[in-house]
Amino acid sequence: MLRIEALCKRYGRDALALDDVRLNLAAGEVIALIGPSGAGKSTLIRCINRLVEPTSGKIWLGDTELTSLNSRALRKARRRIGMIFQEFALVERLSVMENLLSGRLGYVGFWRAALRKFPQSDIDRAFDLLDRVGLPDYADRRADALSGGQRQRVGIARALMQTPDMLLVDEPTASLDPRTSRQIMRLISEICAEQGLPAIINIHDVPLAQRYCRRIVGLRQGRIVYDGPAEGLSAEVLTDIYGAEDWEASSRADEGAEA
Amino acid sequence: MNTGAVPGRARRQWRRPPLIADRRLRWALYLSLVLYLVVGIGSLEVNWQRVVDGLDRGAAFAGALLRPDFSSRGPEILEGLLESLSMTLTATVIGLLLAVPVAIGAARNLAPLPVYVLCRGIIAVSRSFQEIIIAILFVAMLGFGPLAGVATLAFASIGFIAKLLAEDIEAMDPKPIDAIRASGAPPGLLLNWAVQPQVLPRLAGITLYRLDINFREAAIIGIVGAGGIGATLNTAFDRYEYGTAAAILLLIIILVMSAEYASGILRERLR
Image 1 (cartoon, each protein chain N blue to C red):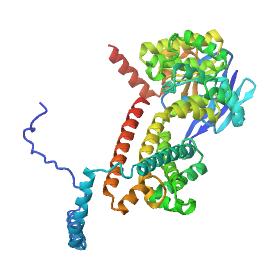
Image 2: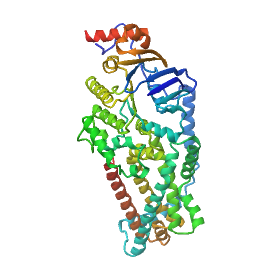
Image 3: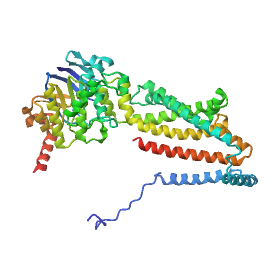
Image 4: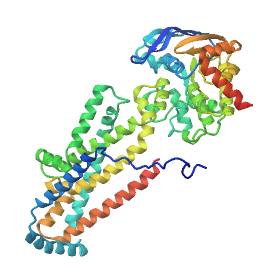
């Protein structure tokens, strides 16, 4: 479904943010991308829909080679890739319904979108998705009137409005409390399973990643250092990903806090 | 526990560091400032006789302010005011329509560098001249009358609105932009769906503020022949009709104040 080959990204003259990343994603496969801050997780998924331009390498989505597309073809390809963001990235002053419909902007014409005259099928889909994410009566609320968990549900529904072939999920729980984090991760993994959607989920929280994803990819300084099943994340592997000193110190601090 | 001095240790003094660290330079600067002030005041040539004469006229004017005369030039005042108001409104709308594309071009986070430089240039030109100077130019180009006034105010509004709007665009939250871009939206819809909702309240505020300013300026540029109440006011002064002048000034004050009050309410509602 998704194939990444020898992907590199360099910001200016800094060290490589992504260094020869190779990754294959089968249809319906959901992977968690873990790694310390600055490891390049966000850069990697933004390279896929080219919110960040890769320096070199190739990315295929199905039969489409994404890195060589011109801007018009890229916009078409982006419609197939739904994205869910860390701090929700809703347009705050628009209503929940408008935020959902913004997922259709790649499909409808300028005046239809500007005048908010969307096809009935889009409206139906939006209401169905609001029901599915558990916000049935929120269509006309303004996005800035919602709580964090509710906003992320809108963010998920917006991504699904695109009728995507895959999902890119960037730290979906980073600004949520632990309970809401679990609910959101559960919702995302359920939806992926229902629709057979493949997804790459960037996530800081290792236990959460293990709980909801069977395959884990560990990134460290732009390189993939682990790619395997969730059960394979031993202490040594985590040390590999997060670095020995930091990892040991933080785990001991956690134990201390729990005791 | 953490109050009071630690025993056995000397109390440490603290004073705010002076702006200029070098003591000699500091005092030299203070001294030269005082000297400059003394010389400056000394160089003023005040003609006290003229001041005394002027006091009478001032008193006459102050007296007239208490007895404004709305009636003897009523029709002219009304006509001037209406002309000023329509100049203000027309110029603000034209200025707004022209300022929005310039502002988008002048926002570094949306526009490529050449467009950015061009649009910043337009803003700089529009903002570098005072309205009176622009008005003199347009009166020379377009002749006396409100057309020159509208052109002046619209031209000045472009720079004002575009600069403030561009700054708001540059300060907006980039995350919704990414999100809308990631959905495959074309550039026009990106502006309409991600930029416009973020900057619209501020744009409305800026425009209403500019409407205020344009009304005030419309009263002034009439003096150089660009139409409006300014021309009426100037004529009144020329004819020593202080009652009429006072009436005009009072009306301007009332209109500016009510415009400010109304725009305040509108801005409050547009959040």
